[in-house]
Length: 511
Ligand code: AMP
Image (cartoon, rainbow, N blue to C red):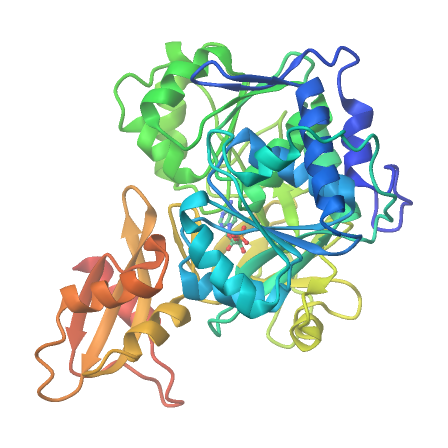
């Protein structure tokens, strides 16, 4: 498949999935640890009823449905309902605070918001101010007004007509300026990527996926779930990653996808043995760099070689180590079918094998732009269609892609992206703080941990590590809150006045 190949899926992504559902709809789609189970028939029925409710609420093609809920099978059915209704699904991390949600809802202007029952009052306040018509609730156990109001509705029979170029999902990815950007992903983007991954990873008729990833991010929502839907098979579904639960379920699974933190945590857990992995076919890692140390320790413990892949919100997956063939530690493999990758220098010139520069990608997977940010879109997608990823890397003579750093000083903590600027802005607002710089330092569990370096104003001894952390906690999702705070007299700067974060990283990594 190349970028110019006509799409081989019906316009609506749901139609592609439906064409792959098992003929026997009683077959399992989701099995929970507590014994709850959902068949493909349930999937069709529940997503059909949710889609009916959305259309009854006036949701029409292209309208946004924002969803900030705990992970549950119903959250997947709601996503599928949005596809069926032709709406644009906008998932939000439940860890986002009121001010963060305020921004997303104001920017995306959804017609419907679905939230947790405990945040209904808060979200209703935001929704009223933003002119959002409907707020529904959903909890992790199938309670709330969404399932309640959909219960007696007649399921939508089919799905809305859509073109491959129609937007199916809006995923926010924070910018280095601290302002989040909504990446518009089309039915065609998602379908092409799902097909490429399903083929590349050799999904088989008897595969069972262990799903322990969150559902508000491309990894758990698209990569893992789409492979299962295209395969028409089942998954073992955990509400969150838990080493004990994973080890218990692994003997019944054949494929697991995780962030590197999953694998370091499993390795630290003695009951995680080769025996627990006896039925496994494939362990896949991504969303953050997998340390070579973890790659080797995992192979030694289990006999399995983790397959590392590379992608991002804006593009879905771009590269993967091979299913058959050597998987090389510290590399992210080859471009997926239909995806092209190149490395460019400062002036946009294409670099040769082994030369380090910015990784750019092109293909049917690449998003169509940032929501209502035409200038940002223009700055990051070149006229020839290549997207400037912001990752720094090289492509060796064999065509293997290596990532060596991140152009934008992004911190990846436990698989979640943390953009320093957003935290610096929060810290700089604290009375008594002159300025700050936020960096990532290696952390054995999270991969990287957030560390804040703070310059106080004179006589501002009342600004302490505790007060900085408390101020961040009140404004930011927990995973963004610094784990450590260090105080300095001056931040190191270069002749251009830029803070030298490399110096800070070197200093505090040694410490
Ligand atoms: P997100 O948009 O949250 O999926 O984050 C995308 C970013 O995560 C990429 O731009 C990379 O910096 C990083 N990333 C994803 N997968 C890998 C990987 N296998 N190795 C290194 N970095 C990765």
